[in-house]
Length: 324
Ligand SMILES: [Zn+2]
Image (cartoon, rainbow, N blue to C red; front, side, top):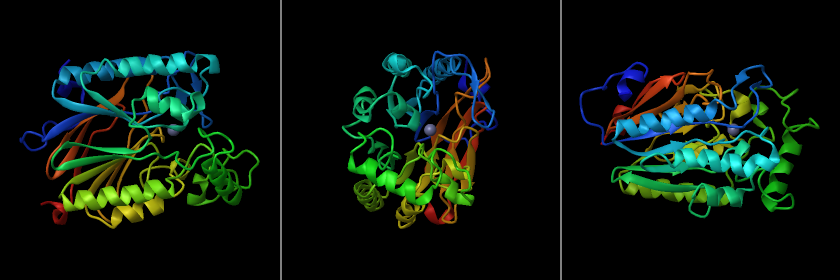
């Protein structure tokens, strides 16, 4: 089917040809288990989600002009039986590989429930670590963050980053179940075991990439499994140190948008510095025959997300002071 016929809302935003386009999907969370519900009672369609991914790849290929696609993490659900984890991850990766282009992945908490991070880094063809950047065209750079850098999941239990994460959780979350936000108030509700933080080394690296992008007059899109803005997501979904990351981002003017997953209902905001935050709706929560994926047209002055079914379309226009 032609991509435009299934996208929500916009037709071509202003007649010009985009500089490039890319596909997006998040939270496939496939598992070969019966449908279930989140702890809030939202239905989850574990077997159907891989069909959503198949339809996404078909749509991306039919589009014919997508330069790459980005998967925002959580490809296999934590309820996947452990002996099935490797098979399930490989099955999903195989579907991504049917796309006629590169797919850039990031690690989500559910990925880490299934496989150790080193194994994921290899399987998802990441460049030796889970944070990296790439430049699809001279004027743009994509920065993929590792939201589970400081994390109580994924590293060996005695790893310094696990210890650091457990110290943060002990300090911030008095519950014995560190996945429970009971008693935590407002934005403090983000201090849950299924979230994580960007560590010092990665923070320095991010600062360097943004400085370099500024020198090269590149526009930057940040990709992170965990949302970075409280107005685009529930407090329980935010990166532990989102403020620190946003402080680095706001030091420069090059970052135009941050895309995330993890908060399945999706969200959108523009922060105080004019940075767009778009949290993508989850493939997992699509009832049979419905979809949540899309593609983005990138221009000099905006990004236009064309969403399918449950993924809303969003036009993200850059502030006038930010356009070259
Ligand atoms: Zn997640």
